[in-house]
Image 1 (cartoon, helix red, strand yellow):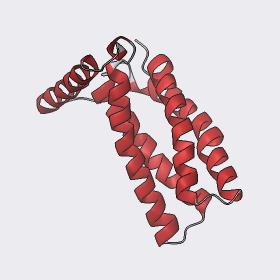
Image 2: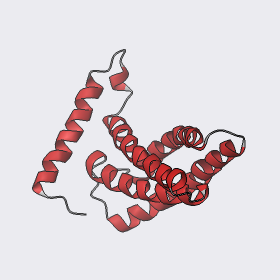
Image 3: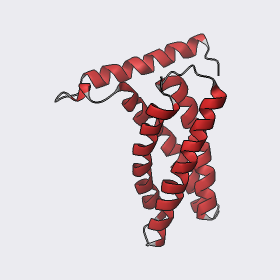
Image 4: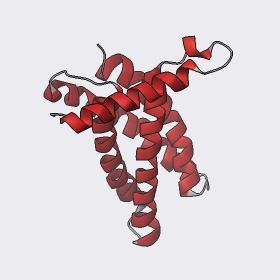
Length: 155
């Protein structure tokens, strides 16, 4: 993945913004919270919104079965998340092939455990499917940031 000159400025501005926000955190949190954590939260909040929008359009609008709609929406969101986190947040220059393979393994584990597992279990218990997906998203966030920082995009 090559980044053009205009994109380099955007990437640097994004990373600097994250550093500045984290530096202003109260109670000494700036020594605990990494700028990449804020970047992850911003990027993945956006891609989670894309996920929910696609899920709602496919399941709520088109009547596609929930497991299929969850799968397609999640696949689109995870691909977007990888590209944005790789370039904008973790600024990785590692070879894409091996890195993306590790990312796919991390995502498959996440998908089975949290996305399908938690979402489906909560929906089966009567929780509205969007609320179930939000709960699964909270579990997913903790797992995915940890895996991306210390496994996929490790330095």
